[in-house]
Length: 344
Image 1 (cartoon, helix red, strand yellow):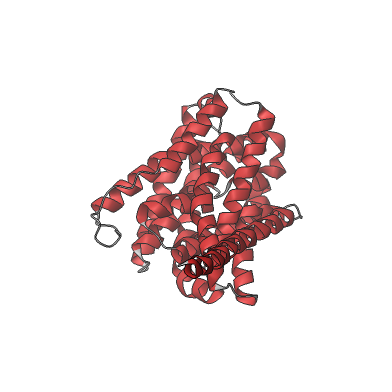
Image 2 (cartoon, helix red, strand yellow):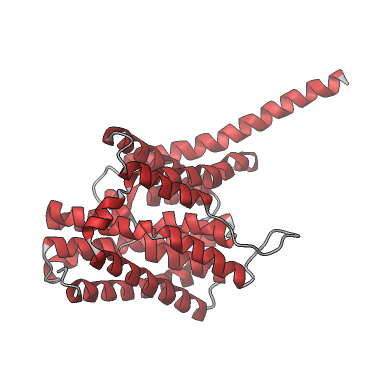
């Protein structure tokens, strides 16, 4: 009996070491991504996008030991949800109110059109319903973060989540570069261009990078409009969970289909309320947002470590094409709305 207990202790220690190895790997990759995101051009991609790509590159060239997977899974599930909750500290709800109903209307229309377009196109292309939804939500709301937030609602696996997040992230980067080149030709004021960028681009980092040619006024408007779309992640997550459940979405073995409750998204909204009320000083809020991005980058690295380039090429082509067409539609609708609502 004593010998049995003694042999169990080293086994537990080995399990703990393997767990920590997975966590440390995602942490190091997130740090590298953060450093790379400070470099010219790479700052357009942002820490989250780079973390996904680094995870995929690491897997392709170094491989991922099986015993490290529990720690990696903890990063791309538990730490991800904590990161999304803390990210709410970036959102000040009064900024959305001050922006006015036109901005809210623009955000709601853009999200609705993109969700329907990308999902519809993806299904026509015979893309799996789960990946179709993930690509649609990522394109419509807030890129990789939206993919990660919606994934539990539709019971997406790690590869589906990783491929969808990478597809949307890469697409957002391409459109960011396109917007920067088109800015002089769009005929929009700096504020109008900021509304356009924030209302149609995928990640917060994309919106800020694209708005840079318009100066501070464009950047400020891009952030406000983009965060208005981020705020709509909460009702969209609930609706997607309800719709998926009604459509007979995936369930665990022996479990009835039910509506997943996105508690972590509600936590995001609660943190937004704390920031809005000014309970914490701005310096503390900024540090929490930095921590949120670090946790989410660890999660993105973990997702990248779960998929290789062969899988991405096999599963990502049609979702990318669907999201590309949907993003083109989003850009067109967004531009027309900016003009029609007098925000140009």
